[in-house]
Image: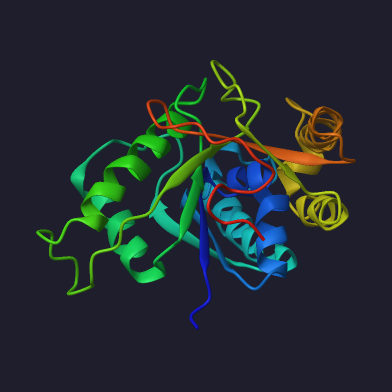
Length: 236
């Protein structure tokens, strides 16, 4: 029997991991193929000692290491940080990858964000869902594949974000924190305390879930809401 597949799509290297890295690790431990797909490297937030290109290389390497710790793999596309646009090229690229990876479920950003790349990312995932799923699009001869998707929690994407699903990640949280510590920006950002925030967020969501730690998901706007402790339809 083929393994089930989970794909986490983030605008930048690090987004998907901080949002749903513990969920990803939970599913990887249970035999799923897990892929972190980054539309850009997030290279424009480069530290003073590195050029944008040097930081891009570093972030891609960090993403590969983090994905490995969480039990998955990392793919970074060639698009530029803070320059994403909603166009057919990127929709086709993502749809083609989805036909290759054939995810049973996809996790991405929430629709409202203070970062334009984040907002565009979820729109791209939604548009690619249609293009990947329809027989009428010829994408490198690959068979059509339709996937459900959910939104995950990011401090920059909180307008209107009210979680529908709390996933118990108590057993995975220590590994999740270990993985995050391999990103330079998470441990060294002067503008935001990423590590502290996401450790605290896991604790707060765990309190509400009556578990030690939890991460949350939100059902896309207009879809039927199904609350539960696993991704609906993909209980472990």
